Amino acid sequence: MNVEVFAEGAYAAVGDIVHALKPTSVAIVADREVARLHGVPRAAPVLMIDGGEQVKQIDAWRRVLDHCVACGLERGGVLVAIGGGTVLDVVGFAAATYLRGVRWVAVPTTLLAQVDAAFGGKTGLDHTTAKNLIGAFWQPARIAVDTALLKTLPEREVQGGWAEVVKHAVIAGGDLLERCGAVDPASIVEEAARIKLDIVARDPREADERRLLNLGHTLGHAIERAVDYELHHGEAVALGLRAACVIAELHADFADRERIDAALTRCGLPAHTAVDPAKVREALRHDKKRRDRRLRWVLPVALGDVRVFDDVPDAFVKQALAAVSK
Image 1 (tube, rainbow, N blue to C red):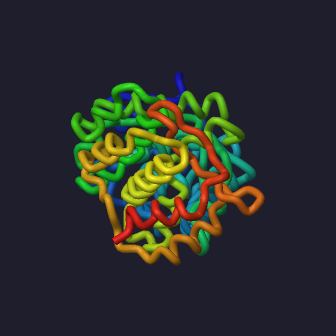
Image 2: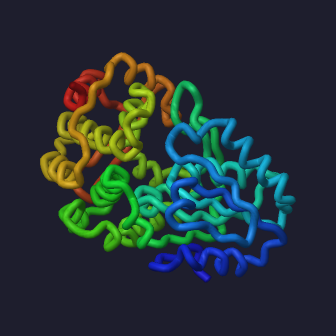
């Protein structure tokens, strides 16, 4: 069996997918709203948690560990995570740290998770100073993607997921960018996910090429933190991507900013937000991708040609931030 399963009906088959791993024990953690709408497998005890950025805290991680203990989860067992990207981050990190690592199955239920967050094995929690400062690489044993679940997503969740699709389209080039926001999102889930999967297969621990997947995330994460996570992650990434394109125009002669702006707008994503630039700059000081006290910026040079820069003038960052602030 492949690690990834892309199919309508995959959600109903989660029990079979887990059973095929021959676990000695099973524990399940599910997003409360997903469970209400779609139910959950009843082959093991289920811990219900709320989704959203607020769940990526030590207290939630501890609750998942307590659930694993209560279920008698063994090293030969499997922990199942059902939900969006934040739920997968927390449960995946619990899997990485419980008994020094147990197998886990990711069941992404949002567009953002189905095209991005479920893949690559990045798990973790937020710190009070910045996003994702606590974590580990821990690949899921299986990923079950059921695009039928997208039919019950709120519109804002779908729009946020498109931000990661646009990001992948910019990295890969081709015609995906023009289809963003113009087609049924279910029709592009596997295509967009495969862009990330191919990169992760070549660079599983972000030593080189995988850094390109941070396009839009440097300022995006800082904006998220500065507005105390009032924006959804995808909305912040969209703003970060727009800002990255401003910097790329100034620093690398990027010529396709208008095409990316148009795609993001077509997807219903914001062009501006009310944010204090000083708070954004403070958040940038804690960016985990800093090296030798210098920020590393992922910028498009052309569609399909994205590179890492560590020599971006501060004046360009200020202009980019001004472009997405109001």
